[in-house]
Image 1 (tube, rainbow, N blue to C red):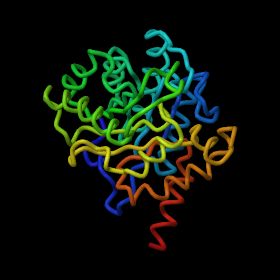
Image 2: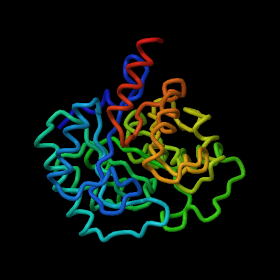
Image 3: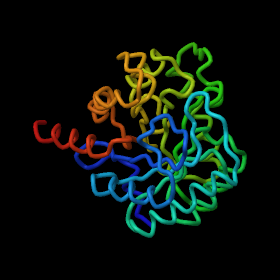
Image 4: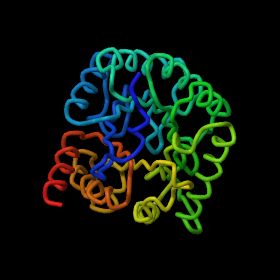
Amino acid sequence: MADWRPMLNRREDGFPRIMGVVNVTPDSFHSGSRSADTKQAVAVATRMAADGAEWIDVGGESTRPGADSVSVEDELARVVPAIEGIRGELPDICISVDTRRAAVARRALEFGADMVNDVSGMGDPGMIDVVVEFRCPVCVMHMQGLPENMQNNPKYGDVVDEVRSHLAETTGRLVEAGVHPSHIVADPGIGFGKTLDHNLALLSSGRGIVPDKQMGLMWGVSRKIMFRDLLGRESSEERLAGTLGIAAVSMQKEVDIIRVHDVIEHSDAFSAMKAVR
């Protein structure tokens, strides 16, 4: 297994760790992130590691707006072989499993995953037990509603305050169960039950949404619909420049991990910024 502890915090130069997205799905919103089978997933992960990714995030269920859920059996059949293959090829890479289900998280951890990345924020009652049992890190995301309905007119009073409070309640349950705060990463859930204004407010708040200073902060903005609303880019294929624009302020906002589809572009951007800083 990988040494994941230092990988939950920003790099020594202040830039976030890069997490590459590997979706073993036929329907994730960005077609370039889809892997048709285990062989392709391993090849993509290997390339991402060579390009500078320190985390690989493996998912077997699309959670794009309007997506339908898949069966546990289908998700397991997609995720577990991919994680096993990536671990065999990349023994030192940090791997997270992107799942809402405790049963999938358990099997993924058994076959080589290091962290659970739960977009539902511990929505499965058994997820906390799995995290405690495996003593693994966990990323807790905020989502208003479910993927199938989350973008149906989302509303907040104060989005930053409400997201922070929700994350505090969820992470509080983890801490009460025995998970150390430094093993928890908070994600504001950009695009998950938010309008463009909500997304921009959360990004502007940076670490302001993190309930405990010992916890990490992750951003997942890569090629999302917010760039359609912000820049008029209808296709996810047209949203890389906007994505890199947000990434450019991630160090200033003290982001620890940035989840991306385009690893080498982010790695190059960070290297260039570091060179002239």
